Image (tube, rainbow, N blue to C red; front, side):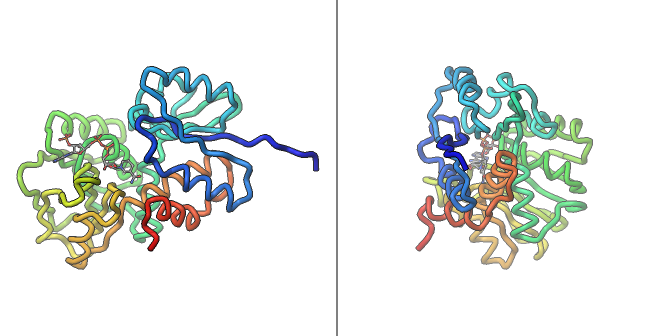
Length: 287
Ligand code: NDP
């Protein structure tokens, strides 16, 4: 076989980006499969995103992840946007198809994959409550709705953000998505099958914070999920666990959104356990 010293390139554009652990997880997956691919974690200022995307094209990069603050502003630089990413209105993964750059959103899909694979719960026909109305909530609500959840209730502090989001996503997914304002302690209803914290409450360094929810009436089989992955054992997850409720932490969403990205880029099956382990190591969670 002739020598081939050319690596395929993917990466992440964001600001700040230095603490983003995705590269460790993707590089471990490339190594496990013997792929000569590299993942570059690149700090890109908001005003430089257009040039960075031109650079990605010029370098023939196979794809990029976008993180804060580029998930929405990248869309004009793409050739196409996948239907669910268009509904969500944000792109976290770009893949190359020939000369075209296509925008995808794997955040909500990664969340659903974690729910199915690690918690054994299929959202079809389930009643879900999602706390929050930011980017993570939009992605999770959209994918729960598209996966056939029978009811998705968005609960958010600021009505002016949550109410239009729920109405807009209900119209675009044609699914039953409702809104409720969050005032004081939110009593999680007994008929909820899934509760998701998609707010940033509990995120490091405010790891002692707990979303003000009252779980006393919760169905004992209700799955409690957190999008916050740093720390993975949030106070919400710990409280639910103590109460005997099944739980799913934010690492699952992070690993599976990366695994879906890996498969979109390489067309190979992602080594999920390798990626999980690499992520735990990168976050200092291994002993
Ligand atoms: P945004 O900043 O877009 O949204 C934050 C949300 O949190 C808003 O709905 C906001 O409500 C709510 N919120 C923040 N503080 C409070 C508070 N004190 N009381 C009530 N509501 C509050 O963030 P993202 O959606 O991008 O991210 C949310 C979380 O999800 C973060 O912790 C992030 O790390 C995590 N995430 C995890 C991923 C994973 O793979 N595991 C992927 C993406 C995100 P309001 O509208 O009222 O201000």
